[in-house]
Image 1: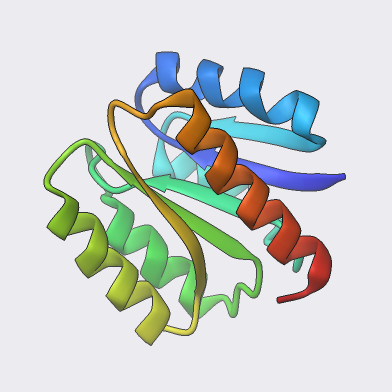
Image 2: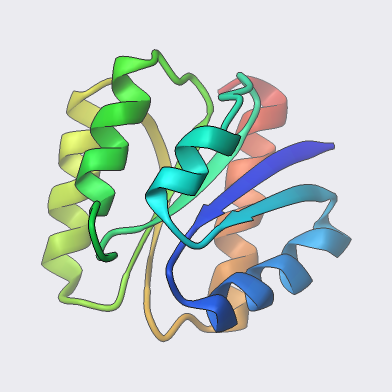
Length: 129
């Protein structure tokens, strides 16, 4: 079972992701704050981390840097309710930092798009790619 960490300050979004991810075979750990995520993350090599790019106190860019500094080799999905360019810039930074970004999502997220992103990350994690 692939571990999915979801970092987002929107409880409604966290609940939706949990509901969608469970039947897909994910063991989901939610963190409504980056500080909580850092204390929970075991950074398993086959884990998937879904990061909201804009949160109070610490933004997604800082978490991307944090994961990179720890040598995280799992998969990353970036999420934002802001302009798509922001998510694409974050993707470029993450990739340049050595992270494997398997998808980006724009809020409000359509359920079909969420499933696609989770499936791509899970498949990449299980294949080691």
